[in-house]
Length: 334
Image 1 (cartoon, rainbow, N blue to C red):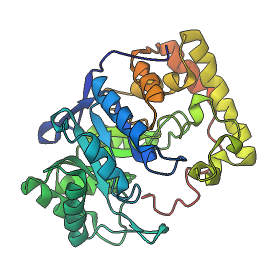
Image 2 (cartoon, rainbow, N blue to C red):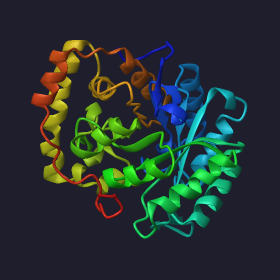
Image 3 (cartoon, one colour):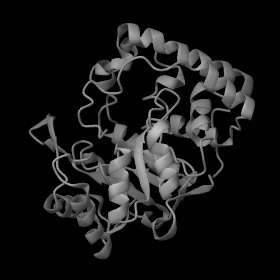
Image 4 (tube, rainbow, N blue to C red):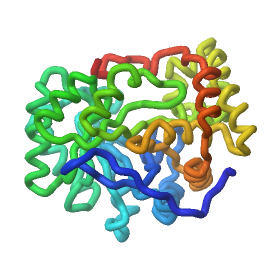
């Protein structure tokens, strides 16, 4: 079960006025421009078009990817298919164009407004369907940031609001300011931190969950056994979970996933995605890929049904990941 030619169903993020219907799986577009080795724009465009053909209409980008180039890539790819797309982008992770390694977080109202206008221009659209604060600015009250985002909704530039990597307290305060449709955060079989405090708040408030890196940055596919497998400029070479002893320890996670996958006639990546999808109808993962063949494999994961026994087996067999999610966790709101 490695490819798919069928279309996907839909799920709903948020509730009430914040409700947004999206495809069951989304497509993370970040790696089409950087972070995961050499970019191939023509293959990226083919991947986006194939995603739309398969019913993957929920596309995720951000102004910082590139920086700035990923929004242009996505905007160009959907220029004649805009009505098929639920388009999400993000602001707040500010990179120095002359030295992209230098970055800061800005949640000031003035920046919210200017960032949105710039994203609309790069994307070539008149509105953004879901606009996220990419990282929480701990120097600006969340009420001020979300208040400015709400003004964009009133102006018709944005349809729905989201947060990324926000704490339970921040989520509550944001939702009291304006309805929040979704929280985007890392969630997978090797990143389950949010289950204790954040996920219950999302369910209480009716906020959807959009997991990024649901395949553990590709690790859960079982195709990475050494950083030698990665391109020289791949950022995973500097990720703690891919380093030395941590990587060797984390291979036990893949072994556990592969055992279930073999029994299901699926790939490890498909089982990892199916596990995320099984966590609730309000969960919409956005696996990233820049190649059609991996997109098709991911879409087929929606047809993998994990039984209660399968889920229990994974819960029991998958050990906790070794290593932090990022080399520097200071930008994560906690």
